[in-house]
Image (cartoon, rainbow, N blue to C red; front, side, top):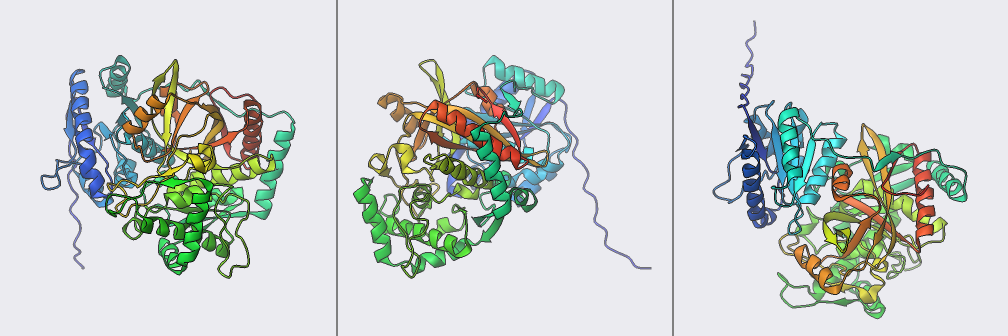
Length: 544
């Protein structure tokens, strides 16, 4: 009889009464973890006081590392190790004051049997809200029950009532009265257009090119082929090493032509000589080469949209992808020829780029581009991080902000765009942003996401508003002044309704020339998605 070495089961830790365990998912970039720890630590102290106020104790799932000086979970392996010591039925808090890589903790959360609460500080200085929404979207995608809440200082009655509900019932109920399913649309030219474009897409099909899928830890941003293919959209999986190799083949002359075009268009750059902290001409040259290389590879594979992940892998080789992304999303942009110089690639058109290889953005950007062009509108669209917001003059004005991909048309033209160096904390190799303030106007916002195993679209209307220069500057300095900003007022959606409902760290925005046209374009877009079989939800005040 054979004797096998059987593993010895580990004993389950026992949950202590009135005790919630706390973990914090962090970044893969140690510079970001170190810099962001003070604000995370301050939030955790606030949470301890708030829970103590209702008679509960918070216990950290892992200690602060004395060598690194922070307590972030910084890899998937570390996350698995931390969860081994957490009682599997214990109430669990995932507290986020910074951007975080969700895959560090999703494996443990998937099998955790106790109630889960995600929480963030409603603050501008670090993107904790962005991290929270990305994590929530991942939990929604994998069908794991959770509750979520946020606060400015964790002393308000709304927050205290919320955590009391969670400790007593395991849930927090949020108001979703602002959301309704898309009704049966009456016949109209817009519905006819949406249906026709949907059928064209399913018949002729499209390809999105994904450079290194999933490397930013955004599980919510990966859409399975089985879901995408039903839309008529297929994936070309590409390596960022191929993009880098193609960049090496782009001539300095071709790169210089991009820079000259931008200068002639009125764009300016804040240049310096210290490569470690300032934007330099060499960094710009690499970014111009990336723009050209992305279009040429897209041409090779017959792509309809492309997404550069960048922040792992390429960040250690070349400057940021942001400038290239914004140029790709612009109808007016520097011309790029095929390698042999015989053709201008996608002449006179934007080429949809989905920042951070977020495939929910890919679907949205591709479809938005087709609807807006068919209506004779400027199709330039972009994602933004849902970063933060505050009341101003009677309205709650959101700060939408993203490191890259914003087209210059959203800023009112290249003459309103200025290139700033990316922060060394996140972008050691530097590179230029397309900095500026989004012009006032009417927009359609949306998000494609996965819930209940199927594709969903939340779509609504909003306005980008103009704030006084001093208020704009205050908001930029409170967040990331090097990034383009949009002052967004959502229609019929409060701050807390939006936070509770939104299933992504990103929101997609596109302009229309006036409110009536925006309403019509929204109908066409909603009809297209509905015809493709996507569950469409109208959010806020929407006229259909």
